[in-house]
Length: 289
Length: 319
Image 1 (tube, one colour):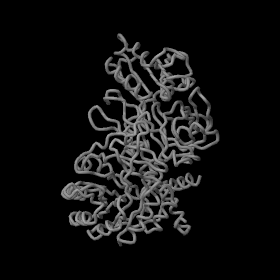
Image 2 (tube, helix red, strand yellow; image 1 turned 45 degrees about the horizontal axis):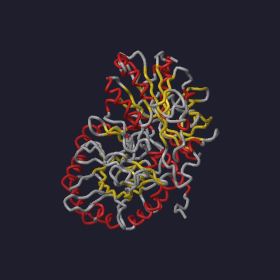
Image 3 (cartoon, helix red, strand yellow; image 1 turned 90 degrees about the vertical axis):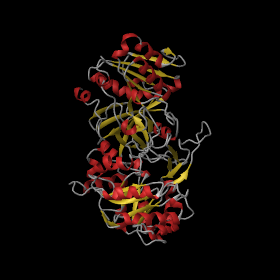
Image 4 (cartoon, chains in turn yellow, purple; image 1 turned 30 degrees about the horizontal axis):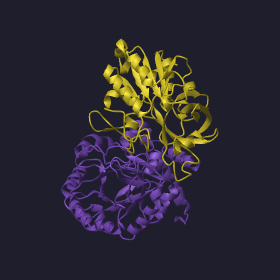
């Protein structure tokens, strides 16, 4: 456990090339699905890192799409007897996610990764932080589940705030395996009726902001709200972002995110976890598509 | 299944680290002795970024027999505003806009890192007038480390308003200006956005080019389904991937018939079979581009598959 914790913030190198993994599980999770793959040859990923995924069969069967692999944060991962188990949270919204949501146990999945910069430890983000605040929205709760597990293993307390639009756009709660999550929903079907960022606003009031280390993943509008709230409160934050991405390893230059200092970063190699003060907005054209 | 088997074979052959990447068949390309015929297309693999991601394994199993850099321009460029990508049936449109550090930044920051490559380096350059092109070629050729240069001529000459690569006259005049500046091989990257690339290829040879490479991407657009407006930040981009493969094959055939210098063929190669088709069409070497995005080790797999195709001596034209 302490080993996983000490490695939690280090970027883990990927084996060169894609490799085929066996799909071991695909189960519904409210409006989403959780599928697992057995990576026999790869390392354990750090929380916040991602993989590029494509099914071995039926990728591009109709209308020639999907063609490119799809970027997915790891929702949970553990080393098991016969390899590293990788869990991914998916919602079928397009040709790639529809195919992945329909994966069957025994099928093979092409993966390359782990890729990208992981979350930084709370003490690195804010030396005054006694713990972490994790805030997730929708399908974006995925990387926070693994981050919470790694923080817990390191003995770092983490408050978890999760929000969903409605019942059809909710799921993944079992990945958190704990009761002290605060929930919000826009339609009020569970928890606070409203945005999850309302819950963050309460936490950032008063003296807590100076000792906060905030980690967020979710739709662009939510990330932008978190970025702006943290900036106003003086609370350091890291955002796990997304952008249209073809390769995941710095080759295609497609995932450009504008930097506050001017120019662009490549989200795949300089992110996907980005400090809030490095960008002027989390509303990136083409993301959330 | 055969793919992973081929990749494993390629990995095994480089076990001692002395000879990187997959095995033969060796080819000679304008004086460069290459261990196999598979290069990367410019702008489809960043060896420096990939080394951060994959570590030393990348150097031990480098997928290409020569590495073609991203295009360098005289001054630094940030690139196009996002979105920069759109997936199409069996392909993609990119509108990246040549982000790079400029000549000085490249020479100071990137060239020293690329000098450690286990394979020859081919530096791609582009400018919008002949003086700037000359400055690039002179600067890169004078530095240690570049084995050859590739001229990206899919850009307008701001002095004439003509896209260099669409005009045989512009292409020949550019080559005649650049040829005396270096003895290093000059490879001309041809644009497919012409009725036929053959006259431009012939003009490049007449101007002193050592090789030509094709195809670059095909001009393309996508519409944002939500707004009806162009999706890409720069409105138009270039199509690549298997969607363009048949076009590449025909354009390579036309160019091979019109020049005596070597031809590097590319466009939608995703397998050794695809590479073998371009070699059957007369290409001396091939380059893998978009497939690198789907598999970072695609070059090595395709080289291994190509070796099998050529060893089998199969009839290499697809029906």
